[in-house]
Length: 335
Image 1 (cartoon, rainbow, N blue to C red):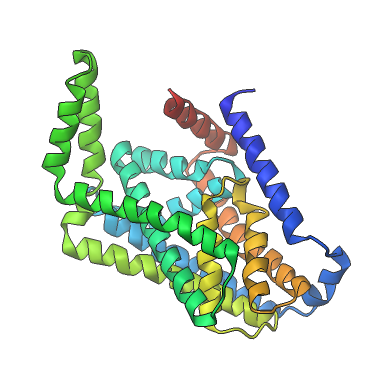
Image 2: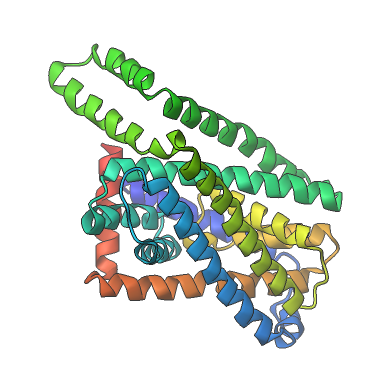
């Protein structure tokens, strides 16, 4: 069994475990009353708001890309949808590699620079999620060991990532000089490509050197997840679950930070477990919480996946191309 298949199998097993935990002690028929009484108008509104959040996250990407290349917002929106689709259908976050490759193919943005920008996006997202969790736990006075453990693992990880990115971005020449010193110990034929690679990666941090672009990226990072908080809150109301907006933010933070767990595509199982965990901490009964989790997961998963497939086909690509890109990038990373 090769490494990729092993990772896929491990992800599927992790998802299965979290699904079992989410459904533990519950009979499927107990979900029917909550599902039958859901407000479909609220579900439709939440779906529309989700696409608003995708527009804002595309805008964030534009701020980070502007120092490298000017790409129209609508084209970035399409690529974000394609990326979501890839992550939702294929394992190992294939959508990230797919949108990077398409950005290079269709917009001429160097792959390594957009790769750095993607890393910056994930770090920004992690910081926002952590702030949502900390704020939500404090506002609701929740003391949950799982959420506490997740926060304790993530805080040093994202703090370190943000610190390294900031220092390297503000001191690019020194960072490049350090790389060149390290590569001196390598054969001469390896020095030039490695130095060029580091230069390209550092080029993706250009937004950190522009106050306007950096401020726009930070504000849109919070903006997109606040809109998604509204999505989760509208869905709470659609299920008749009366909770403050801070609980919706806590849900957003917990679910997305749990994306660090290597589960199957679309966070199947992990999403449901953490929704039930958070809502259970504020005394929402398991059947209603799990019903909410299942429908909200569809709202988050289905529209972006369908839109991503449409935009993928419009670019003359197929689902097979996603798999080929994923296999190529995985092989290159392994080598």
